[in-house]
Image: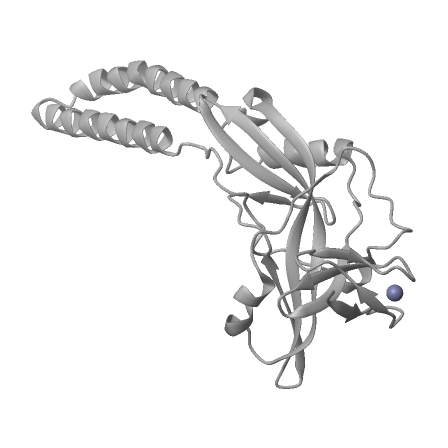
Length: 255
Ligand SMILES: [Zn+2]
């Protein structure tokens, strides 16, 4: 039976080959076993409640870059609490400590390549940790060693960290989107999201410009023929103005 030395209490612990998560039989600390050896297995507690995550989502959806009324019209189809596995590599790069975080599971969820793991928030996953009900733990499917050749400097520590996220799926105008709320910092990590359409604004602005320019030119030509036509031009401009304004207003309301 293979053995490893517990990172916390130093005891020799036996485990079954193929086990990835092993509990020290002396101090109950959970270890993560990788091809590169035994490492700590950390977990970050949720600092953001479901209600807070929903609030963040609403504010994010109401942002200026978002499609109009996204916060009102988006249909939330899934709002899941997930512990997502990432590898944390603390490295010494030329005397400076650098932390890199990489996903331990292949995923299409956005933002999981740029997570920040504040060292102070890490908890060793031992018997004192209460994860709470209904939280999904995703299993790693990428080996830690896969990342080692791409890392700079020398290793100080490498560990598996279970990172708290709220994974949200929603539909907007017939399309599906997903986004992630960081369960630690409360930040929204967008992937693809429905954006505000700027084209109608440019279109109405261009149309208004062309209409007024044409009226101006025609008015000028007419005024050269007979100065009395200025009055006619002014009337035409006054008549078109409400239409252009109404069109612009309709577009701003719609998009
Ligand atoms: Zn131990």
